[in-house]
Image (cartoon, rainbow, N blue to C red; front, top):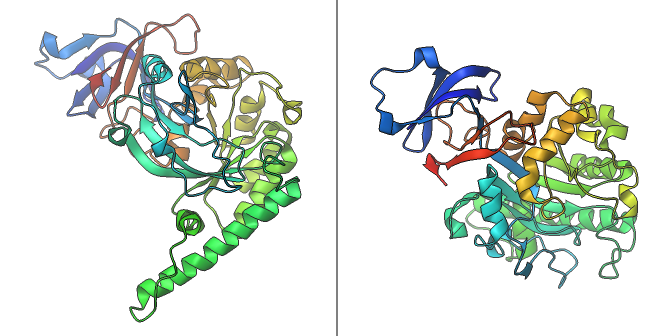
Length: 377
């Protein structure tokens, strides 16, 4: 298949005003100017974008798509205070109408997290949005471990009742996991030693303290952002800040620490006290400070099909347009650890592509075609 006559936003450093994208066996094989189009292209193999815009598939790197839908909610497991062993994989409903609507809006990949009631909530999933069996849609599982600070985990189960208690509980669990990991590695290296007794909590956290599974911290206030960084540095975690509502107040600190921030939801209300200083200019301010940012919908807070609109609002509030598009493509892929597979229109990457009839940040533009792994969906 070849997409022709499009404005190609490659997201790898260049935009081609009149270009083509050639796809073979679900992968991007060639990207270039129309003047460099290979000879011998058969009409039935080509799709004319008619001057429209071609983007990599959009990536929503923090949402609850498939867990919260028309048939109910499977978001927070409140039977225990910390539930690192639960897997979002076991709660996804791929038939939820919002999954279809997200796909039709060009969102081809999502990272789905459990909710934020628990200080440690469980294992996130990165998946494509096409399919009926979630196991066949998986890109990475577990994709991250969800941690929560601030108001949401306070007092829901009686303990922890304060921000101090939340941080202390997370430290306790990570300390136990570090000890478990040392015992596990030592026993693996010495056949005469017994493996530690299986503990589902510690087994789930073992990869986090080993740096194999990223930690994603749900935080809003600036002081909670600082606490997340403090804990992550204490345990040497690979981590990202999710929401970071007051990030613009500490942008220089975030840039200094080199921590990525997944901002959003942008299109929402101040539903709780810690959102009092919410600013729609947060994403732009963080980008200008030198922070790597992605934009999320936090579906259903903002519904997943509105991801492009969220990027448009960030651009309206001062973010460079290409940076706004990067925040829902290549930056999101980098934070998810899959930039080798997706996030840009680059040879060898998955052929996840979106075609629009106008500029992607113009709210009037319509998505006309969506491809996942080279197949139109």
